[in-house]
Length: 152
Image 1: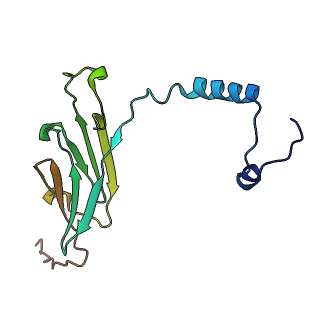
Image 2: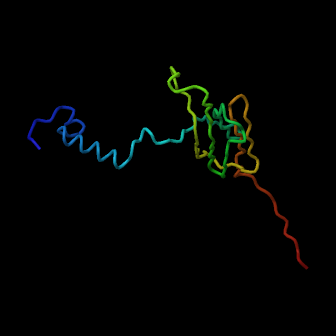
Image 3: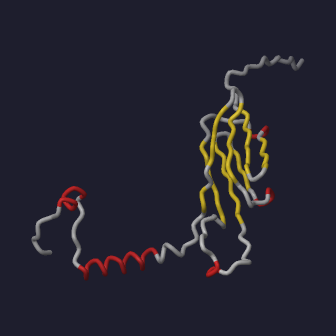
């Protein structure tokens, strides 16, 4: 490696300058190791809004174009996972598109809840492409009295 003075950017970021042959070798090694990452099918991630009321946690997400039976919602006391797949109609040839921004394919999202919920009382409603989950909070302050029975 030649002893050239590092640029301000190289000193600031700690990067090094590669000659053309080294840069080509690195690029080939990375491509062989990871494959063409642009061609790999990635799973989309849903955007969500999560808020609370006095007794519920409400989760909202857009699932337009997905049939309710194609959604898989898993709920534990402290986590929600939503999975699905948005199928694309293949009636238009690729070369006929001007813009192609809609997401088609598998998607999922796992949300850690800010408070534990009662999984048996969860409600899920889809209306006009908006999925709304209503999750009842666990009332940790709730108490009950237990009567002791005599077994005589």
